[in-house]
Length: 99
Image 1 (cartoon, one colour):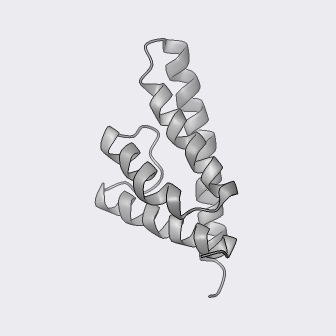
Image 2 (tube, one colour):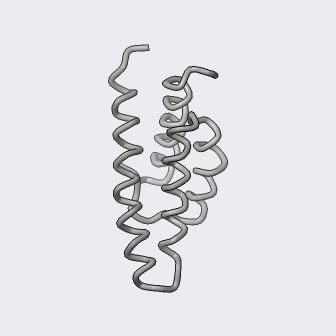
């Protein structure tokens, strides 16, 4: 798939499937190691370079929540909320398009 929108839609569809399987209604503020692995293995490869960069930042943010420092945890949680919003915004944008 070379079409940016098609790649990102495929990534969003995969993300939706993962969230449904994990009983999440949205991008969670914290993620289990299994969800992080699934994001890296099945969502990230489907995304365009630009959207994939945002997803990669989200994954890194999830990982930083597990850091020892309370400041790292807070920073990771804040970044996760901001990046999760960007991911959802892109997915909502694509879901409103007609294919």
